[in-house]
Length: 470
Image (cartoon, rainbow, N blue to C red; front, side, top):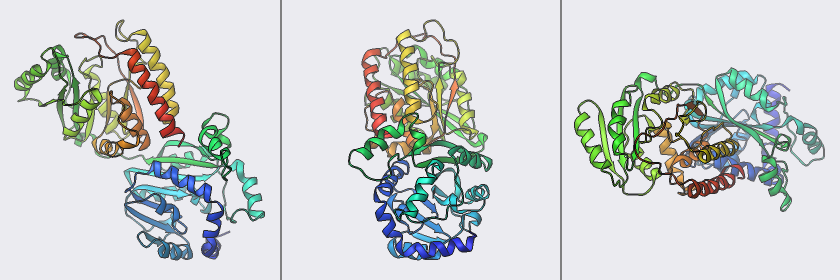
């Protein structure tokens, strides 16, 4: 079927598309629910192959634009959703040049002649932060879909290609898109009370079962830098409580990075004079280093990090624990990783190099290994060391995480999982930088292994419900 035949086909089914959507209401409702999880409300969204516009409207965009090769589809979409914008356009030769936060291609790649060339066109509508969401059918379901169409249970389609997930990922890679997340959904695309929810929420997320699901979903980003590394500025946030002996060393050992580096100390009610030491260090080194000292009014490291991030004025945000068990000299590795565009969220890993003898207690080490596996499964990106305090991200991404914080709630006093969960929900590209974890030279650890361990188990459970079983 050539392009003109496809256009005539879509024009012919545009008036009856609503009838078929009602027949597949459960599938469409669940897909829309998942996309609302992935796409924050109020984002700018472009849907390519939008049909009559229902999916675009369902994600509640701040600015929503739909394009389709079928004038008939666009006519119905404009009439039904006048608050959105629709145009006749072709994925294989896009005329639109506006940049969007999210680009959705739902089933669209099955109707183009050259998928690789079509993916190349996407750069016209993408900025470095854009997320491209590709939705397609698992080729294992081809016989079922064809039979359903023959029996009149599903609208007839003119799909030209049946592609495994890995082939779609490879085509995206060839056109400079980095796949962040890929997977399957919907073992049961029709509604059967209790059965559908059980299969789609739980079984579809289990090994051996997930590759049998109907729908393939890939989320990718353009391989582009946000800024040239020499133009990127950096803010290093140092939460500190009872760390008086480490404050001056934090200043002396933290290198300047990029176009400029500021140090923000957030002191949390110390009994050893840490706050006074922060003020002294600012007085001594303030002429050569940009140093800010804040007094924490809340409780916990997470609260201190949020206060420091809110006060930061630079492009990239870093956390440096004041115990200096992560050497400040390693921070340029984190800066290079994020400024290069290779990733958007950098997590330190203490579990690669050999540690100093007293750097981490044995039970802490076991806990880290357990939670690394649990969170790799939950976040669908490799996380080796969830509890390393050094984390780095773009300020503009942190502001998005903060805006959507209510989704997960505020039960994380550390701040680590607040950031990891938020990064996963935004589909930020996560990378880990190995560091040489050192023994503390001043003070004592402020982590309660058992009390905080119980809290971490609660967060795994929260992640299952809020991320995996949505």
